[in-house]
Length: 262
Ligand code: ATP
Ligand code: MN
Image 1: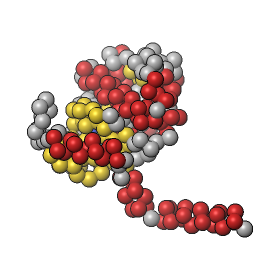
Image 2: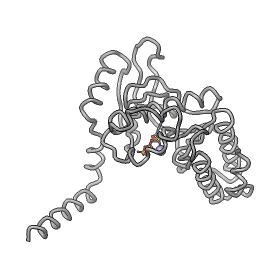
Image 3: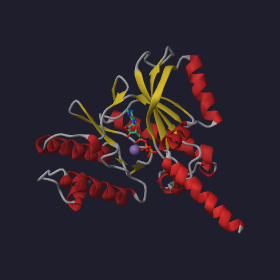
């Protein structure tokens, strides 16, 4: 009887969650106390002038739109994106291999403490972005990193983020051009940055004013990673599938794309 009651209670709860997406979204925007404190300090110290709404509420991270304040070493009064890696996340533990195989993070003991692990993810994204910027790849510029909070330049304008490739509507000729930017970027990432994105998809590429932007590189690995080429294969499948679907005639097969990139 007790069990049945329990099952029923859980069902109602599941229905409620599904039936009220707003509540879910709002709940997810809540930061844990330590994160809140750090963000509050950022506002007080002038790192940030204002924090606006949520640009994206995801499983692993929330991204907010904000404006920088007056603070030594950072440009003041510019739009920025704050990516807050969630500390409640079990997801990250499943992705330990992305850290373990990367020589930059391999021997860090902190991998076993969740909060420190998430901090490593934020650090990894920051370092990857820096490598990419040095190679001239269009990606957000890291502005400030504190624990699980990464402030970076905002891709977009007036609080509107640039559309992801997923949401872009252009004709086939333009898709062809974007395709060429993508493969050029993949090669640059591989040869100049010695990185494989490892989550490349139409959700992690943005397009604005004819420029392609690469985002979401926390999971990107160094070529030394034992699985780097497997991750690259996956990226090639994802890109080949996408541009095929967009009708780009010259789309290479995943295999050819892989060979071309390496
Ligand atoms: P999750 O997987 O939990 O959704 P994520 O790890 O995919 O989070 P990102 O892909 O880095 O996080 O960012 C999520 C979304 O936030 C992006 O799709 C993009 O729309 C927006 N975004 C991220 N970074 C920026 C930025 N620098 N400028 C503007 N928008 C951004
Ligand atoms: Mn993403």
